[in-house]
Length: 111
Ligand code: FES
Image (cartoon, rainbow, N blue to C red):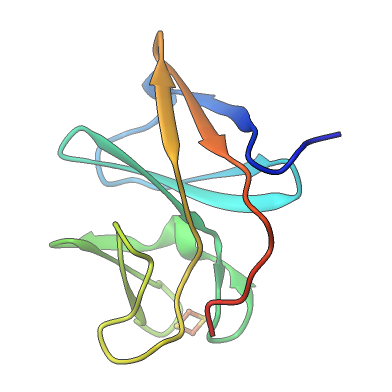
């Protein structure tokens, strides 16, 4: 049982390769982790375009992750698209002794 606002362990930092996403679960949330220039980002893994669990397979272009299915781009910091309102959830990340934790949040729509 997880509580809203709780940090959940999801992976070790050594499991992440630079600019290669990893799918993890934080409570009920499906999360895509990325390490870019040494910084960890945690975004919702389900692309709002076709509700597919593919964001972790996206590729990194500048400050965005690009969905591998149809190329929608999401800002790594904000989860937002350049062109509109639809976006991905973003999660607060805590790194402690090489372990990555993400904070569970309440469900809210970004649409
Ligand atoms: S499913 Fe992500 S852009 Fe289409």
